[in-house]
Image (cartoon, rainbow, N blue to C red):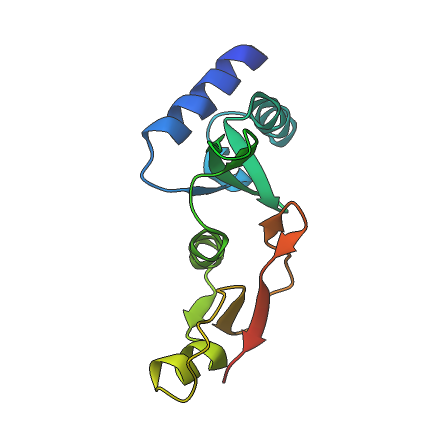
Length: 137
């Protein structure tokens, strides 16, 4: 049986060497059982190595040079798009993106609205900032 520190070290090592910015709890199922993985992920969150951005979703984190707080390494739109791809939800341009790209408005989209095909019932975000989903057929 593996010790909790060994499991946490294996998860931290896998995260550090991965090209991905977003991780799902299921990405580590081969290392330990559900509870051990959850405990290790909570420890990594407490250490500031990763940040929870949704139910079973984590992102690589770092210290912001501006606020000296733990923040994700990439923007919220990028993280949400990567998470949706892992959840097998098709991401398409939102109506705001299309209007801007077609020149119908000069208002630059904030990136907080993401167009999706299919249903998504998750909240993705951090510190009270969440993306919203626009269902596009």
